[in-house]
Length: 219
Image 1 (cartoon, rainbow, N blue to C red):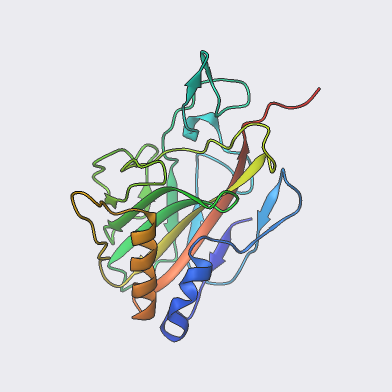
Image 2: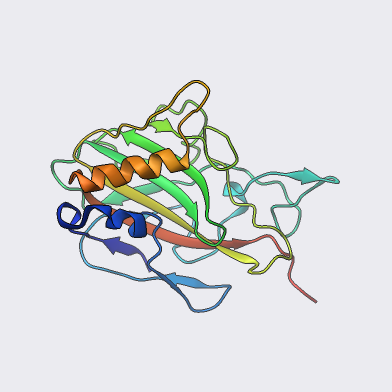
């Protein structure tokens, strides 16, 4: 199920603080979370993974310990590449897009890209590299200025983490403060989005949810 969300931003501005992370989710169980469906807004899809299904190793973080990747259930290397994403139902006066990958289970931001050009409707797999040509990026919660994939801790409940890719359409470019010693991070991006919502600049949003567990299956 793909969530499509349309919110009256001009009337409720700072409600973005609730909706920005794509938390309109209702988990059936820890292994198969699902996301609500709504009317209108952006429709976000991916050819890399299926909505509400598990993420492939190609997008998972690569952290090698004793010769194995602790971020995958079988120890296989993670590709750590951002997935392909595409979106439709874009408002005609859109001037930029923002894309965020957030883990609401751990309150962790893996990726934030903003000021994506208004004619873009798709990010190819691997677009979240450092100095990407598709848009400016914040330092994620790993401290890296690019995409870093999921790495839920093995054996720590809940073992399956939810992951939400959210796309925002704005009628302006986003101003995200960034200094040499204090580069833009998740918090500065979220505050910039809240300001944009308060001033009526967010036209629509949409997200697609998925999950991943690095814990090996039991006997």
